[in-house]
Image (spheres, rainbow, N blue to C red):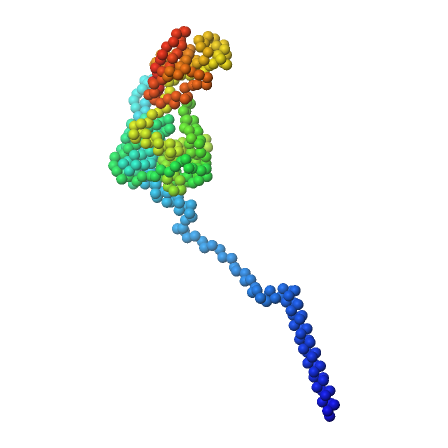
Length: 382
């Protein structure tokens, strides 16, 4: 009996040992799987839940972009200070057989901007040139007579004045700080009261532009913009995104689209202040054409004009226009040897004088081998 009990106990112990070994082996295999197959990271890190993409909520009809909001704010801020300018000029009516038969009124249109609370208005000179009557239409519809304080045709600027005080005023910026590509907003009156305070938006296309306005005249250092500028916009403000005036709209190129020009406000403000103070002096001229000569070109000039020059250096006057020099008795063929007491030296000319209307110029000339002193009062450039 005892032998049989012993055999059963041994078999039980062997079976337990086998199961325990199998358990350890299974655990070892699990550990290897966790380490080398990435199963452990999958068990530890929760799976990424893919979120559905949400589209931005549509803007409500009344909402605006920052660009639009800036434009609206500028218009609200400056619009009340922009005025319409209407003019009446009298032009001659001529008949083929009878000549002058009378005069006919002609209406003109432009824009302007109030820059002082006492009613001073800045505009273009060509808007009010030769006007017999000037009428200003305010933003609220009131019509007020205006008088011309003064103008600068060389820079196409003029200052008007309307009676009263407390007018809305536009704030001036600095055109010296402008950069190509920044926003430009124009406000003006392109056709008339039906389209008053029309707003156009663009950018500063270029700086320092020069355009010819006649055979012997030009506007220099202008701002170029693609903000639409029509004839009635002349004299109105060009604004930056802060609502500050950076230029006075002045001209367009008819052969092109999207090319307009404005006078920089730095120059416009300086000229307007001088006009109000009565201190504006226009560039002057004496009305001569001349050739400078010295030892290097004297013989060539003598051969060309078949003359004998009396000195080795000076100015040969070749043409005298109707004006100050002609009135002073200067003639073509005269030789200038000194200006304002200073003897002419190589490379000298009249440009350095920076003449203004009313300046006196004293010249010593030689004519028929005789010396003369002549005084000439500079007049406006034609």
